[in-house]
Picture 1 (tube, one colour):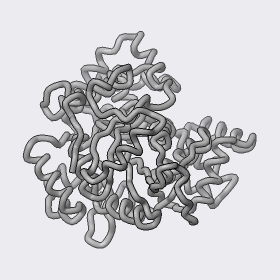
Picture 2 (cartoon, rainbow, N blue to C red):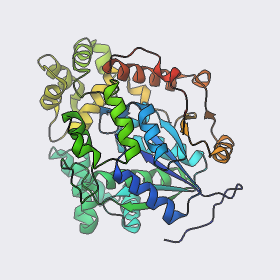
Picture 3 (cartoon, rainbow, N blue to C red):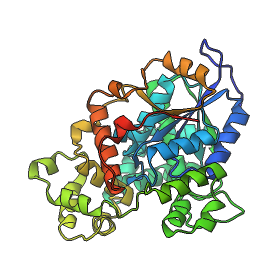
Picture 4 (tube, one colour):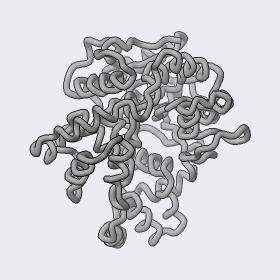
Length: 401
């Protein structure tokens, strides 16, 4: 693709990436290096999920550890994607990330996709943004059959564009299309750049000959399979991960099960009716399952159906525990960009980000308003799972490498 000159007055090419790095592995390293080389980027700015990730789970590692990993592997600055956007469906996740990076003046948005054909991705994104009557009718038909919304979208798309139908069946493609839709919706002055993903998002295997998936790395970490882990992570990230394991900064999947079940069983009828996702009585189904479930996994298994995907159920669980309601998610974008980390040699980049359309938040005293009140609670809940105290958002500080 042709590489245009930066449109901003500072004359530097700043590239944005939206990520989770849960944890940072060799696939992520390849993405950053390839992006920097192909786009001739002067700076890479990464917007990362904080304590909760898009698939509806707490992050394995702390925000600080994942920030340090990214900085050690080529990112120049890390900003936060608060839980109000990271713990959302693809559209909400994209809303937060694209809004932040475009408002900060990034020239490009680089992302991974199973199908890195931008023309095809644009075609799908455009149809989803301005659906034809035929597409809308097909979507309703598939939803009426009990399919989940993502599956119904994919089937409707496949009927109209056989080659494009499979695009919506892959998780990174789904996010890529959500990014493009957000660019279209807001007329954002940021250009997309797709990098082909060569490993399976949900692969459970770590091999020496393919780039790893985060799922496989997390599984190996939780099993204590360090020989497998060390082949999947850059050396600097492996050092950070080992330190986190020794010092109790790894959140195990069942660490908050009791807190989750108690919270759900304690929901009042008023709180239940105010939860964000009310489709088809899903909150009632969730509460009924919580009365008998003995673990978070058991709860998800009892609640999920063809219509209600596992990720959707998980997101609603954590949104409930964090005290969110329908009004909570009715905000367009973060009010400011919280700086989590920066390279010591990137002072020029800080100057660029500091003169952008939204404030660059660098001190705890700047974290005022509902977004940061909700964010602080998310950090405190994550810390509880690692048997840590409260207030970690305000004590986090900026990681400098």
